Image (cartoon, rainbow, N blue to C red):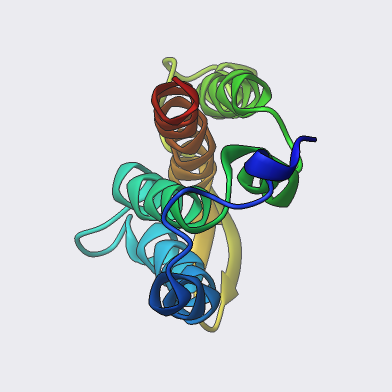
Length: 144
């Protein structure tokens, strides 16, 4: 990596410091939106957008290369994985001889999440796919 690529052109101390605190908060908030989504406003789409904003902020403060290292997976892999999870959650209903994308819930109820079911798995897939799409677009635009 070249010396000029080590830091983004802005090199703002305020932005670097704010990013250190905001990225974890934004990622936690995105998970909160994801888990609350099937009972109240929120869900995988909004949660994925907030998570994408966290990584975009990190890429703006540092470099796209460092943001990709923080992400650990290429955005295209996230898109494919998210789509597979979302479609797979719909296929579960076919195993119970129900129409595609019919919600199936477990009998076990967890204290925070309530009853787990395929709508929650679908939301996780949407979260991962939206995160991948947003980061693919943002990283490509920032690298230009």
